[in-house]
Length: 348
Ligand code: NAD
Image 1 (cartoon, rainbow, N blue to C red):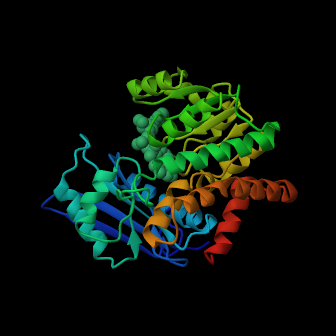
Image 2: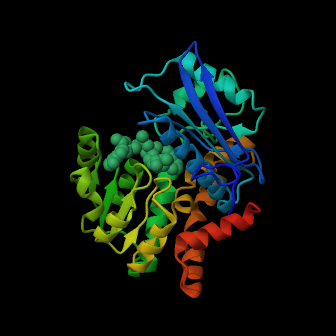
Image 3: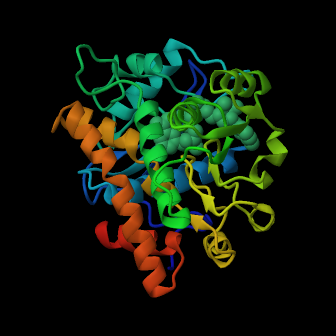
């Protein structure tokens, strides 16, 4: 498609907001991909980028992914994402978060934020001092809210089980080897669910002690981060950063299934085809990892309770099944099938 801007990842985004606050040093990009189905919702990533272009690419790609994710999860939300360009020491102050909250507020509800990599519930509290367009806030007494991570983990785990059923004909992950890239919020929840069902976990994180701590907790083992995607396993579950499925890494995969929570796992469109051509079952990332935004949406829109959140997350496996069935009948790869479904939903 012809786009009005020369950025490679520009996909007819409705708006891009570049935020700068000299007093606090805040530099952020808020990308609004689509408000077709509702306010553009998606978390804020706090990350130290090598350069500004990397931050822009991340915001463009992640916000598009949110449009697709929210649409495929049946939520009344459009897609957006924010990135805050963190300093090298990754320090953040309440004043910087307040300035960011004010920037969100000035958009008048066009964008709604929540947690993403590098942002916590306590950060959302700081942001909420300046804007009501924020979710992922703490709640009491079983109400819907809080850290989306555990909900994402549950959805990813259920998606892994669906993939195992589809590709291996098994009803359980008991006795299977799951290679987990990352040992953070999403990965650790996936590891707990999988270990509780009897899977063996092989874990890698660039933060070695974090990987070791998780491995100890789930009686798993640790491998070098450079080796995790080529580790022989029944499932490879990328739960760290994006663009890790490349021509090279796909060629090295030794697994029948790739199903994980990281956003934007495919480096390029062609990689969706490459993984399919190798006969590896791929769970489109924005479908399998929608559990967190399902919780965020239910909190923000206030259209349900915790049991409805659970029901909505439990619908993820059926959505994956539909994609894999369409993929088989149309001989298109699952990523392509999911993109086509999502684009139809957001009117693109
Ligand atoms: P997190 O910050 O808690 O954990 C990410 C972990 O990945 C960190 O421990 C980090 O050290 C590790 N890591 C970074 N690069 C790595 C590499 N090359 N190899 C191995 N480990 C590496 O973040 P999270 O909330 O667990 O999110 C993980 C992924 O899931 C991200 O892509 C995020 O966008 C996506 N996601 C998260 C949620 C959520 O609810 N938290 C929802 C949907 C998608």
